[in-house]
Image (cartoon, rainbow, N blue to C red; front, side):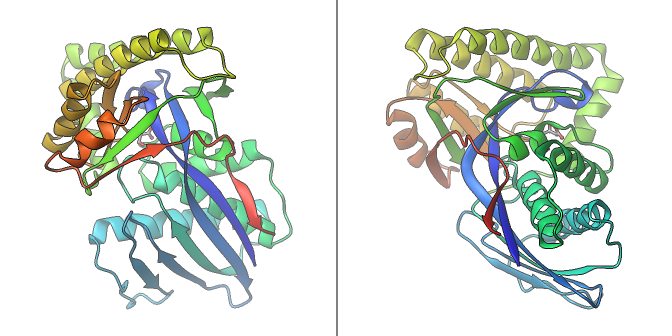
Length: 338
Ligand code: MEV
C-alpha cells in the first residue's frame, strides 16, 4: 500500500489563454489530495473517495456497472472524479508495464472538486505516483507531470493545457507556455481564496471560450491580451526577491494585472455573479487585486491581501461560502506512506 499526495493550485494569471499556447502562471497551494493505491490480482479497480469538498463527503463505487456512488453530490462531478482516477490507473499500469493489474484506490482531498483549485490534477498526479510506486516503479516528476497531463487530456476531451498538472506535480510557482513548462522563483504572496461552494464544468467552459474565439476576432484578441498580461506579470515576478515577502509596490502591480486578467476572463464569459461579487468584495476591502481562478463558472477567486480585510469582507459577502488564506506549497507530488 502506497500513499502519495499532490497540492492544488491557484492561477495568478493565464487560465483559458494557456489552452491556446499563451503563457500562464499557476501557484501550488497547501491543500492536498492524497491517493492510496494497493495492487490487487483480479485486475479490478475499486475506488473510495472522501472529502472531495471543503465540507467533505464520501463516495464509494466499485467496478460493477450497476454500482451507484453513495454520495450527495452532482453526478457529473462524481463521474468526472471517477474518470480522472480511471485515467490515472491506466497511466500507472502503462508506466509500470503491468496492463492487467487491478487496484484498491482511496482518495482523500481537501481541495473541492471543480472549484478552480486543481483537484483533478492533484488526484491524477498523486494517483499515478502512488499506483506506480505500489508496483515498485519510481517515476521522475517530469514523467508524472507528462502522464498526468495525458490523463487530464483524455478526460477533458483534449481540452487541457499542461498548466494544472505540471504545477501540481512540481509545486511552487510555475510558468507554462505550450509544452515549455518550468518552475519559477516567486516571493511570498499573501493569497486569499474565496469559495462560493459551487463548481464549473471545465470542458464546457473551455469549449465556450473556443467558440467565441473562433467566431470573433476580438475574442481571439482578448485571449492574446491575457497572454500579454501574463508576460508582464512574469517580468514583475522576475524582479522580486524570491526569498522574501513581496513588497507593497510589487503587490500593487501584480494586483493591477490580476484585475485586468479578471476583466478579460469576464469578457470571455467564464465569470459568474458569485465570482464577480467575491472579486468586488475583495477590491472594496482594498485587496491589491482579485480574479477568478481556474475554469470559472463558479468556484473560487484569488485575491492578494496581506491584511485580514479581504477574508472578513468575503465572510460577509452573500454567495461566498468560505474564505481562507492559501500558503504557497513548495513541494509538489510526494510520498506520504511508502
Ligand atoms: C482549468 O483549471 C484551467 C484551464 O485553463 C484549462 C486548462 O488549462 O487545462 C481553463
